[in-house]
Image (cartoon, rainbow, N blue to C red; front, top):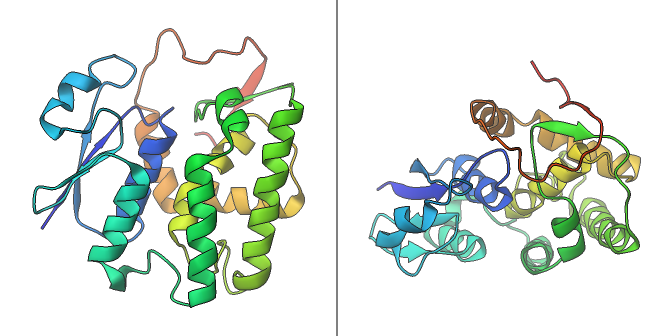
Length: 228
């Protein structure tokens, strides 16, 4: 009963990180497969998983293919109600589902201007009004979740949930571009940086080599926090 998970380059693929976290963090059995997202070979490597054409993609133990991260999350929650993927409290569950879906479909300015990268911290990144607007909305959602349901732990709803999975790459963008956020938002982002699962992911990312480096901004940079 093992899920087959197909992911792209760990340094840059934010959606792959989400797909991996939703299996790793909830202790679900899976076998990862790395495909050449930036090498351009991923479509051939996913050809047997129609209709999938992007990562992450997942094949269930029954052979069903999920080609979208939100579809993966909902399917895993359906198959594994005991795993705690969504909060148990109905009000918390409704809010978690809402903000997870908003992350899945929104914040295009932030995502386009600040592609996830786990290699370095850019210095002097200029934050546009559109990016600032996305950050303000994200901080509002994080603060609402924490105030209403997150008083018992470091995560948005106290215990780790699918909402944290979906916002993990935002924490990486806040770090990698030194984005201006409140102390509370930075504290939440730092919880992701210290999470053992993320540290495992980034350790694997450090083994990757990319020449030329995608998304080079031509800015000065310094090492990722706690980089060994």
